[in-house]
Length: 421
Image 1: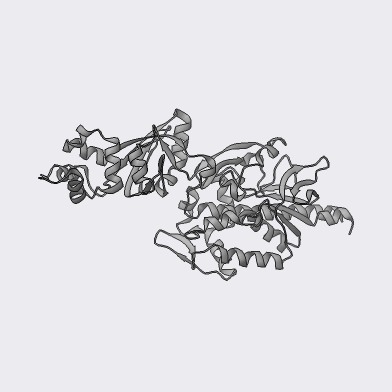
Image 2: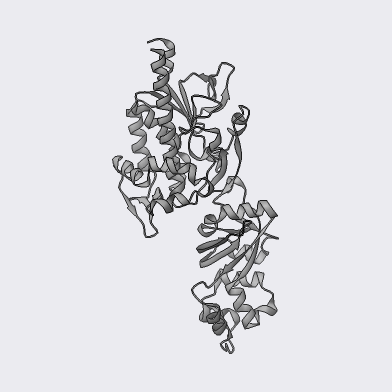
């Protein structure tokens, strides 16, 4: 076999997260020598941290509902998920010797709720398949001859590969490797990259909290509330769940689920005012009746706690936002409980976000996730321009896009290898 043919039987995967590792598995199964490069001291660091407290791997809801979670990019993500649907991901996990179960919310978890056993089993299988790992290798683009360049502990390294899969993550959790450092490298090559912005993130409230609220209630949850607002397109959003007061605003699962339209509203008009329903299980008429019930010598806090269930962080938030004269008027207080206005001024910084939106636009890629401007270079994972809420959707799309990019790279190598024979 000549040197050119040998090169076309090799692949470099840059990024050792779920997308990159899945691409490596597909390529290795196709007889390709795969080298995985990662800037961190070990691979899968964000994957492991995401599994702290329970590794939510995917979701069991019907496929059409599942696809809808990807919003504006659902048409582009759909074929990836059709080729690698959630049930196939579960079967793949079972093949690693890790059992899964469906929780009460429909979310799917490993039986032991941990990411580490799954990752260990996966890395063992990849090494058995001949995949080689190179850690502390930070990708820095291409040299003048088209070779990949890496900064490594021993100095600069250049690598020639028949195909390259970029799976470098988004821009959140920089300390775990997803720092968005790849953006200027691709932009310099004429690749269309949407700016990275926070997704699944918290938000600051306009003017910040008082010192009293911040010192006593930051980190406290608001259980069973509803949040509603209307976006720039006139679409109404309303969702129930749980949120948490932070030092500077609000965060938590309810906020994360609506973070995309909230972020876009703030970008369009500078802020967004949402309404919180602190008693979503009660009608306004019922709350008015309960609040107006004579309270005798009891304090307002005790009265609301016994009649409406409003206490703790909810009561503190009412006092923070509602003027004292409205608190003492039963009708106005009831309306505040059912529709408490909260103005959000900014999403929290990108590095604090669970994930990021933006990235390599699908228009810059062909159907096999190969960059149109860079033949033989494929992209996968969170560095693509899509976003989704938490609940297993992020990981599922990372796995699915990694499989698609790996298959695309394998087809590319096989085609070019045949041309060299």
